[in-house]
Image (cartoon, rainbow, N blue to C red; front, top):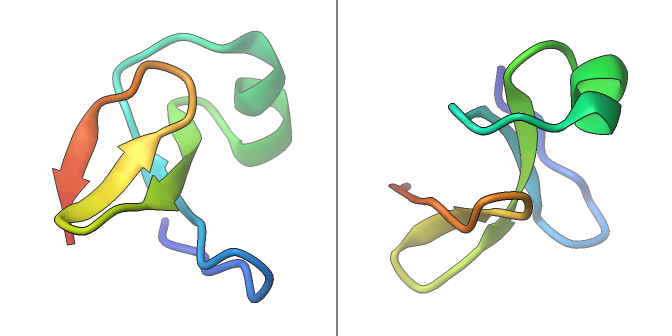
Length: 51
């Protein structure tokens, strides 16, 4: 599930970390990721994923 946010270019991407609020809001295992030079970084655990 990849959704772009028009405000910040954030994406909702699957991640292995745990976060109760984001599980409830975006679905189990889906996390907000911020754009970086190389891809996207999880706002919960900091894991980076290539774009």
